[in-house]
Amino acid sequence: MLGSQTMRYLLWDFDGTLGYRGGGAWTAALLETLDLALPDHTVTFEQLRPYMQVGFPWHQPEHPHLHLTFAEAWWEALYPILARAYRGVGLDESLAGALARQFRAVYLNLYRWRLFDDVLPALDALSARGWTHAILSNHVPELGDIVRHLGLTARLARVFNSAETGYEKPHPRAFQTALETLPDVESVWMIGDNVTADVQGAEAVGLPAILVRRQHPQARYCCETLYAISAYLFGVS
Image 1 (cartoon, rainbow, N blue to C red):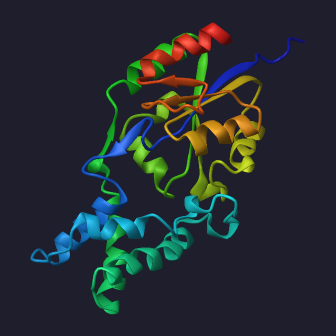
Image 2 (image 1 turned 60 degrees about the horizontal axis):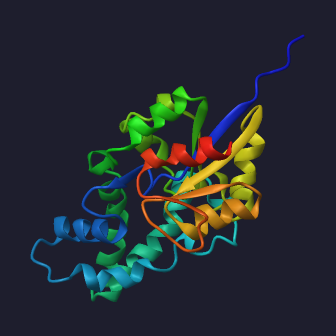
């Protein structure tokens, strides 16, 4: 009886690596939500931005959130953080709470989401050379909807999303969950744009990692574009 074929996997971060929200992410979506409700407001991006630096699950990756692995529970935990931002710029509590709940639809507008230009050519070229792709991302529960809208589903074996697993990168279980789920693993690399979450998180569990779209002295492998990834993969593996 023939043994099963082993597989080589690339684990991809999503936001900032494969895709992005056009017009800006969290702070921009806060402002868009406010624009729709109060077109004449005077709140600025800079005023809202500090409130987006704390409170999200990925700001405390050492703490699993297994109780928030359903979309409604995840968002219910986030609404107070969003409302805090609106209160911080002077809105009353009632309006802040209402805007926080309106934010979800604004942020998840699928037509806002984009892929970087190099994503599809790079994924297809790497697939042709024997690599199988999966996403490992700290993201909102609706990441799967975003991925499908962007036409990535057929190119992916799996999507591992922190909002569904309860573990944020760089928590070791975020990576181990993927490794335990993927079948017939021969080798795995992590690819992402965050040196802490993607590179150091992966290396802490023994996975090689490539930092993309930026340079950092603590990343052994760095690529400005996804086209350059193959030089490392085929030079090492």
